Image 1 (cartoon, rainbow, N blue to C red):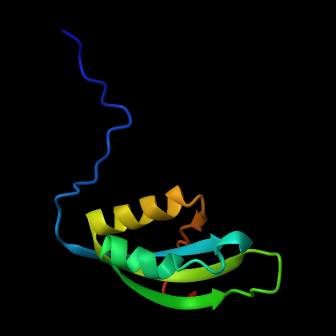
Image 2 (image 1 turned 90 degrees about the horizontal axis):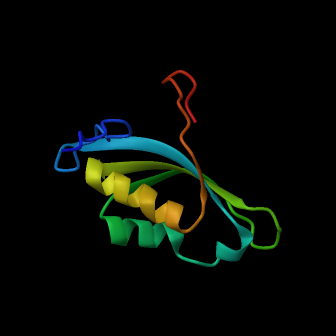
Image 3 (image 1 turned 90 degrees about the vertical axis):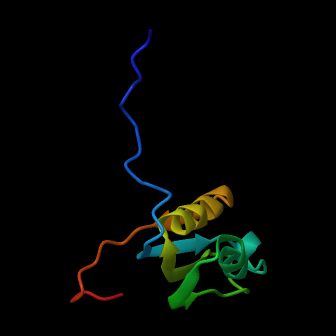
Length: 102
């Protein structure tokens, strides 16, 4: 009988229905500028999104940026991050103190 490997085991309990908040910066490439990425994020994952800052210029070739505050259950937040990853978006998790702000 094999002993299960404990390495890499997630400590996140997706059945946890408590609400949580996380902040992320999402970089949107030029080819997705006209896609409803944030709208789909809300409707597909059932989370609340606060856009703290945004920089998106349809006429420039560089990617756009959204500083987002995501609110929902652990499962909803995980689903939202999975959705963004599936779009191959660059996601940064800034770890800021209250004094630093956004």
